[in-house]
Image (tube, rainbow, N blue to C red; front, side):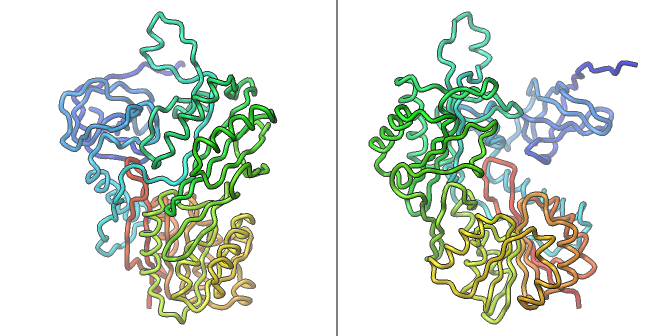
Length: 470
């Protein structure tokens, strides 16, 4: 029997909460939850559903009866189409409230944990222009606005340099001004597009797999250095040098001007050769006198100022006196390991990405840090009894896993090693709560500190201190 796929309309729905993935929450007349993409808690709206599931609906607000006092005017002209800053229409103090609420709810409901009083979330001083890395895509078939679609005019200019439309891998929104990265990011992007258009450089088409220009990456640092990387689909020496020389001359402040020739089906550069066209092949980030060398493939927290706040929390929670052996799991490029090293006797960093460990070793050498060692390998395989026997029983373990959290075998090994303290840094409090639930018989949560790394979005970091039960 064919299912009824007709969209439903609900009137006068009060939006009561902000949920996961930046969606707001209302209730249908039958009690089912409605997840909304374009409303703010406190709004009263009419809703048209887009999806129907057994326990919930998804939908959009089509008419606003009452506007929430939590609302604010979005600063970006692309808000509502670009999916990058979904909470721009909500005042920042309210964003922080819902982020803190999400962390506490996840730890209590998913982890079923007893919590101490949670420290108020650390907000970001900069609410715009805080990102140090942005990636933009070229397209010869840009996303058209509804106004353009409805008009009778023939649209000749379809080139775009901007962001993917949410859920559409081949549609790019042309960005006029982005409020996420400090200048000269916007100027570099706009000049790149303008020069390419004037000189007939072709923009990429992912469906046809043709066109010269694929992506533009811009990295900035707190030291004022700038990296620009252009990804070309094929080698075209004349046009490649034309564009790169123009950027070099127009923006002499660029520290590292790089390029990649990538004819693969996807845009990832991690398996590609990065070629330095002008300047160095890296820039430097700085934190408390430590310098971190950042190349095109390096991972570094994308909000430098808040990364510093996050790392200070982790170091404070560890409570180091100078006599401790510290393990830093999922160490990445060793930033946390080096940051805490001056207050530890020895730090051991472990990471699965070989290039990240190479960066970590190079940065430690550059910073004259001699009490940190780094090892590469899959965490669930490397972090075992033999590893502990070789490197010693840790006094403190710091763990900062990816969004999926820790592998169950890693959690089991943590419980077997049983250090007095574990500092768990997470970018996903739901998977953090799942892992903590597996540890609660042996460890109690004694401190919780949410940190907002990404204003205008729903994302939130969280640091938890676990202490061994006596």
